[in-house]
Length: 261
Image (cartoon, rainbow, N blue to C red; front, top):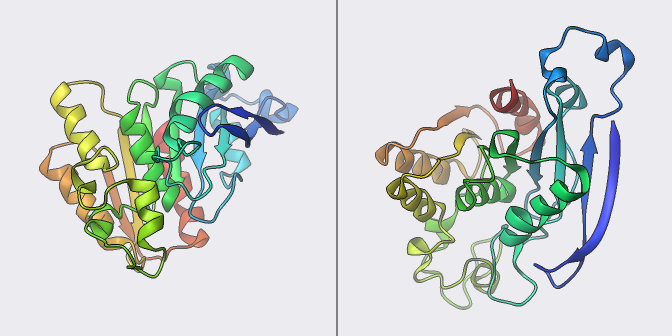
């Protein structure tokens, strides 16, 4: 498995940033000689988004990448919820959905089409995967979200000085914009999904899963109900589990298999 650490100047962030890349272009000989139809097709690409307080690491099992012949690109989204904030140098949506995709295409020859390009994330990164995939439906063919932080309705209406235990008003205001109107804004994935459906454009496939003991289970159920009411195709799965790597490690296999098999 080839592993890269790449630092470059980001126009979206107005400074240097870095991302990690894992590319299975050095698969062991015994795997190359096996009868594997996925090795005979062009390599596909998975953009992997980390959670709140996380960083650009890869937790997709190497054997899945080798079996299904896909690369993993993991940007550093910091704590920006993968949204374009108002401040200069805070365009994390643009970083992932435009700049990084273009960089990967030019540098590695990957992510050439939406059929070959998917996005996945955990927690904050799960929200980012849903939002970014819906914001760029011509780029991403499928979305995977594990325990996504679908918190728009929970933070809507917050006022200066308030804190929900995870972060304060000022932080959410910086990421999501006006919290009095956030439910109707483009920071809300529901807004993007409804607009995309009305426009009749390509809708990315979605696979959402969350643990029943996860503190984010109700926001996930609410988003699932929204998709059902809008008749937007998706897979939604609940299983026993909490907001931790044990749950994500168990559920990454079915999501990746759905994406690439």
